[in-house]
Length: 172
Image (cartoon, rainbow, N blue to C red; front, side, top):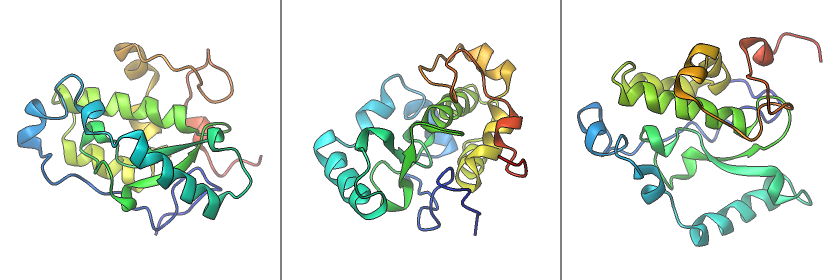
């Protein structure tokens, strides 16, 4: 079982789930096609009530806007679009937040679609511990290469996160 450093990592009941239709052999005709993730994403009418139920159970009284209903294994790399094992509430603020994980998802998608990283390797890395996967794959070089722009990166939008941001042994 993976450790849960606060709410930076998903709870144990969210191990991630993949769409069995997405394989290494099908990536060029599925996830690597422009617009795939948007078309596969559940409609707001489906995801919003689910997010509200999770909020009421896990973070009663807190603002829904402070959390993202996140796919642990992103749809863009073959994550199951609406499988409870793949959905969790990820903070939008603080250390190692939703914007950081979204940056990692983009980098992994590009690496997978350029055939520089096997699909299964990307899926396993992000589902085991996305912060370790971030330190491995969302390097300054990869972020710069893919020109990812995020509105929020950690607490400073102009800053690119580094592996030091995910060192859980440091004292806060």
